[in-house]
Length: 455
Image 1: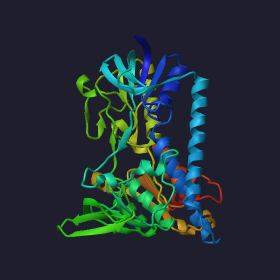
Image 2: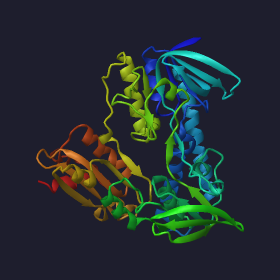
Image 3: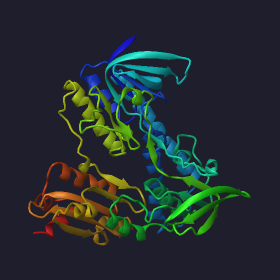
Image 4: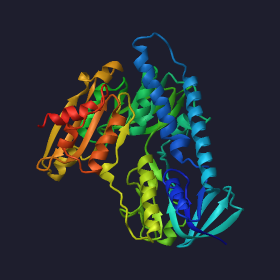
């Protein structure tokens, strides 16, 4: 049986940062991944392809205000594929330079020091490997609502997968689920002229996000028909279209007739075989870990989407490095995950981004805070981009003036939020931001402008 210091289940963002760090420190590392490549779902069917499409459409929206032209969706898909191809080649080069091994296969956990791999995902070709430390970074997969007619639905994978994507737009689409995947997709499709029917069983879109921020974003989004408090009962063929039968909370039935139906009902953690038998604790949200990414078995770690703490690629990378640092310290915790400093960007058009404690949570906890705001309609760069909407809101602890959280709606939100996250991580105060000279003309200037209002 081959022996390794560290084996990872997965080769995406939850695993490869740890693999590189450990390899550089002299550890013998094997990554096992069913795709056999270093990518994870972010590159294969998630954030990289979806954001390539969305950013292209976003730029198209900005330009068409001044120039009368049409954009070909098949060309957008070709560009998406080129970006994915570039990233795959870059990852392969990184692997070769580092001399890191990726084995294609599906891993099962046999005991606290052994995994069994179906080589090339072939159940008739098995091999066992011994490890001292295991990192489970198996990610998450699309959740499918098993209603009548679910087989007629497409998923985000059909939209974004490498060289297997839909490259022709439907005239109309029903999107089941108004979480971040559903509403991001609805946003760019609407701009491209698709009639969007967005169906959500809850009483609001983006459930779980701060209500104040969501309510400010909604009026700024492209046109779409919202069907809130409606559950999908069934989907059926209707000529060359589909009929989506829905029912609201008062049992009133209705339907929408569309060309395509997208199921965007969230993602579920991929729990490897053997987790349950070994006694590793988990629930429907994922494998339970402490702040150092350890499971209840201290030489086994779980990082990224599989633990459900913060299902974001950048969070997975940070968790991966935390696991590596704690492995290098003999499974004693020296590095910890701070979820309050992990930024989230909703890539709608316009964007919304947030980090830390926002009004819903601040009020729930009874924390006294001070708010300051910058109106992006006054922003120079937003004017240049013809996107004069939204705002920057910052929340500081009342006594210490330490930054607690913030959200941004509008121009460049996904970039600006990183500085706010860094401020939370490093314990910066309103004075620190007020004294920062942000470059002009950048929407970042809104941070120091807002902070100076407090002095």
